[in-house]
Length: 440
Ligand code: URA
Image (cartoon, rainbow, N blue to C red; front, side):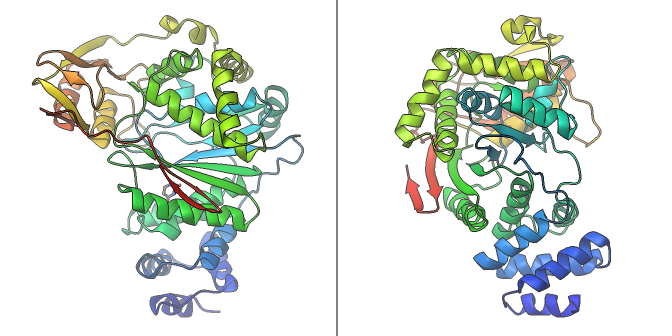
């Protein structure tokens, strides 16, 4: 077999066989196929797409390119969850304890912040002492004992994706549905859970800017999961506004605690109930409506917050900051950001809000940059709210006035204030299962 012929076949719009895809993945991971041939193939896939069968084959060849985590020694149904990334998205740390408190096992590997989006691992590391780099044995034991553990991606998981993602990033081939779907699903399949819930974000803060594109991506991922025997459901959720009120690592942990104490922002609580209900549904806990009630009850009876405490303690974290959020280190500089005019908030460009929080120190501009765990933004006003000129719409937390000045400019430009109330936009746009798409 020759790589040249595989490229030519895809260039001409034909379907690649499983053997051809396997040949490419093996050769590329081993270094026998150079980047220039891999880039030519990525571009041909970008331009011609892939059939469902090809996408499933690509996903499985990628998943098998490294370690496949075997969770079979842990009893019970294991459910994983993946978010395509957003601003203020702290849902994992709320829903994993909810479902674990009902006996669903969650052995989750999460990522760090990327660009304007935050990452669960960075948020967790804002808790003093919290370890996210556990070895497999400790990770499994915590899942057995507590029911849930969240760690960083470790081991030799999907090396094919590491190489291909870096290549796509510099060859303008990221925005391809079969390539994104196989990249995400290969990692979820290699991580070993029985069922997968996908939270596909849509809007100005997301990868996929329109609901239609998000549904196409969700359909591709659900089809791959079901094809290889993992029950998979995707929710299309809104990322045209930051989720909840907090953006930034320890600020978001405080909001996680508030939400699990039943005092969280309405939008965040509603989305978490929906996500948790779908994880419970996948794990066989009954109809979706029953699962919703179960999830709500675990928040109001305190069981989910207790589960978060247990997980944090098991991973070496200081639980006293969860009980009393004022024990978190505090930012040296605080600034209230005022509305420039009177009216209604029509939009908050979510990507720009994310970039403003990175400017404040909550994220990294370069891979090796340190994070300021107490930096970030609390939104006092959200899309749809009425504001008066001069009223506080947000508070910034950071280490210097200069960072505040730069971030304020970005944030003010991200906020649009109009004279009439804006049309309301749903938080949940659609649900995609193997049976089809339910639009909300
Ligand atoms: N996230 C991934 O893991 N892979 C992609 O290709 C895009 C987003």
